[in-house]
Length: 168
Ligand SMILES: [Fe+2]
Ligand SMILES: [Fe+2]
Image 1 (tube, protein in one colour):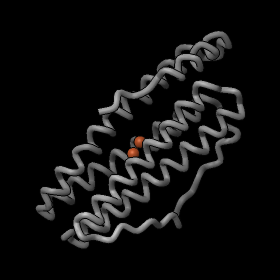
Image 2 (image 1 turned 135 degrees about the horizontal axis):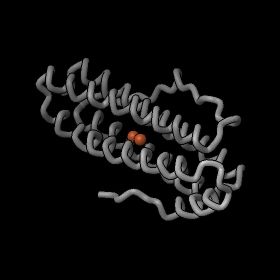
Image 3 (image 1 turned 90 degrees about the horizontal axis):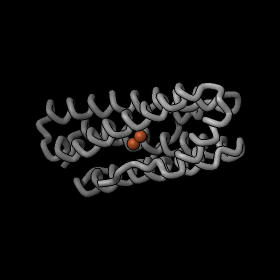
Image 4 (image 1 turned 30 degrees about the vertical axis):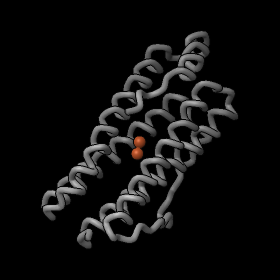
């Protein structure tokens, strides 16, 4: 059984993953409308991944005798229509850093509660956050390099089509 504290923390996290999925979906749609063919593929993929993160948490909570509840009440999708490509990825980066902090907090709670199953389960998320943060940082560096160069932007977008993460 999961302790109340752990159940609460994991439920919060599954809802955060759901929010991430929605956020990236709206970013994907934005970039598709703007004509960024590669960026939009990347973001649609990323949105799917976040849904998988959410699913993993739902299945884990239920498997441990908890009750996984989706609650998107507090979901706030920021208005991204006026953002530049750089600002969009900066927002994404900030979002991932917040998620990393929350995962770290969850790991800490799992240790306090002496729930080593959950501690072990969360290690996958820790690894995932390290990869995601570094991936988004690399993308931001590329955007920084090209600045206003239209040709560079075109190539960057093309690159993004093949810029997938290495899955486990
Ligand atoms: Fe995630
Ligand atoms: Fe993520």
